[in-house]
Length: 261
Image (tube, rainbow, N blue to C red; front, side, top):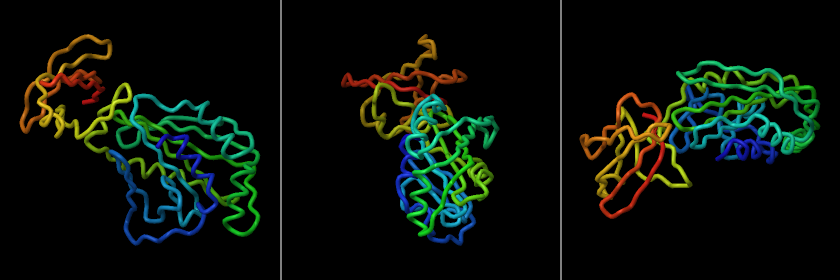
């Protein structure tokens, strides 16, 4: 789910602030295609996919998004989407970067005078009028091994404390699946492939009689062929950073994608 789509869902449904199911565990793990992230036990799912609530939503909400790709979200596009979905005018405020869990995490703070659409949704859910005004929210975003992540968080109740510390703690737990380092190109769908420890493997490689794995650098220069490794995997060239991989099969089928070994 894209970042913009995920955050639109947060503010489209009034039920996001209803109390959720309590958890007695030390943490609550939320996962998607190729990743998992763990929040404290005070967070749990809500009625909206991709949205979680802190202390049943009354302590704040967060929206998670993850998509394959090599670029960070465009902040101006994000702001335009928020203006439409939240109502009211938004302004970019402070921003910055931080190192969390070995990744470079960016954040952007947005301020607002009022958020009429969100205020109306919360009021309908809680049964009494709530008007969000003169507040702010923050978006965290990063690119990790060919996966773009974004987590947007804000306080829900007036004068509430935004759950930024909880979100930053959760980001430190981000774990990627074996296919997270593979970025499909040209709308291709990758099936049963993984990359780890500099090797490319998976069921697809074994069942489609791959006879050559060609590797190119970011400028398109050929850097060599991958070599056979154990269990049907292929050893990729060492120390090349991001590379373009082209697979050749005995039946003439081909596939190409980016790999971050």
